[in-house]
Image (cartoon, rainbow, N blue to C red; front, side, top):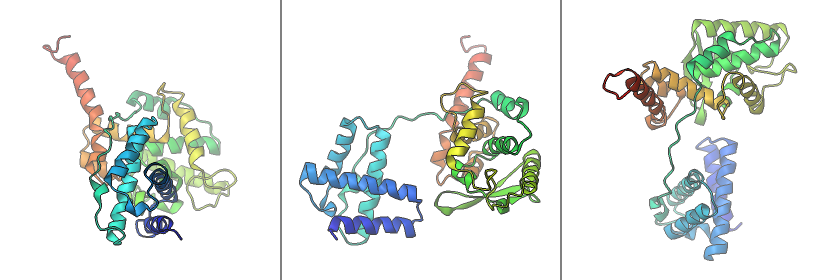
Length: 299
């Protein structure tokens, strides 16, 4: 096996067995490393990936930008390279890691898209869902995503045993297999209890909470379709995905005075910086209130 292939294979195996990253993430890392390997060979005449240096990495990033890749994409690929060469240093495959110092292009910050509170009320209070199993399940999915802020993958991975009706909480398995407990209010608790009964009465015995009428777990794409369908009825937002409901959950909490550290724990963020982006929406709301209400605001 070539040195390139051996180092990359060992690194990917490390990500899988030690870091416990998802198969999707590992495939993404492999594609990035394969792309860099090809760049080294064709553009730099370097046949061994462990012989690359910071100049090669900068050239690779520059080429990505020249090819109209977004700064976000370029930074993601650079992050992959940094993780790989950090691993190589730890394994004594290289003596110096010059790539750790390479800076990526600046990424413009985008404010999270969220649904207004009035539109969420319209969705969950005014909109009529039919009484079929599909209708009951669809409404619960929307309600659960909005009231808990869980990710789509966390919802599809939710099992019936993860729902603790007695203690009004659910157990969620998040990124890197980290568990967290999320409280649910009385109304959502009742809706969960009702759905479990409906599911049982239909003879659906799959351990996963949300399943099709054929007793198969709902896929990520099926959940996306449900969310997009119903959000389209109450909002004109371009993005109408499950993640928008996660953004909405966080934004509404902060707009109504929730502690940012509590929101961080509910979302399952590893760092507070990931949660702080939602405070921008809160600040925008404060600005609007100020401009509308203060006598010296100029209005």
